Image 1 (tube, rainbow, N blue to C red):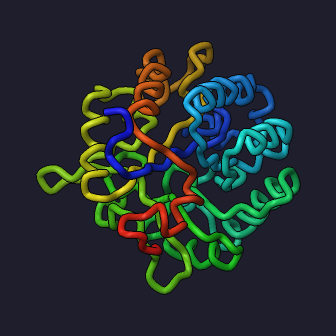
Image 2 (image 1 turned 60 degrees about the horizontal axis):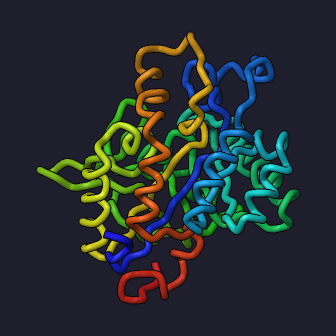
Length: 286
């Protein structure tokens, strides 16, 4: 295929520690310092793959990680990648009050801005947890100067559900914000997730390639995502639930090879670049 679709997609990274994504260990903030930190080594693996294909991505940075590993954040920025924010403690938006969400957002923005000197433009909620019930968060994002969000996954799973949301990038009604939903494939009236992460690890690559090519033929970019811990073959935590074993560990061994194929077959850019009309179908502004 070799990047012949004519559409440039977006590759995004949720930058967090392995124990911050697990729902069993995420609430145990007081125990986080006792878990082995692997975010630097795992991110270095991903940065090497991105560099080998000259792919620039958007990294949605957890504020907690930025405050503890400023050199890592600076290195990501120096490699030409965009930095957005991903909350501070990786908490479901639905479990926060608006005031708590605003404080976490402000704290995470400040953590990134202290390192780079640049205010982030983009936001992604942990667990893709902006949906119809948490739409109040959009007002707070806009008030904080965020220009785009990429928190909506228009499908239904155990952890997140917004199946009726628009599938393609769009400007949000009543807001000066662009939403970049994660990639889904519409088949038999159902939105099937194909955006990366667990789906890239466990689904056949030929299916992922076909799904992205289909989106591109419709003139739409595929918004893909990954966590650095998904590339970390040495990380193990024996107390995971059966669901966590599947969602966090299954398919890791073949992921690097799939990424190399993905970056060979398709063109990618940071989300910030998709805001520009020259990169959109028909030159439109979102």
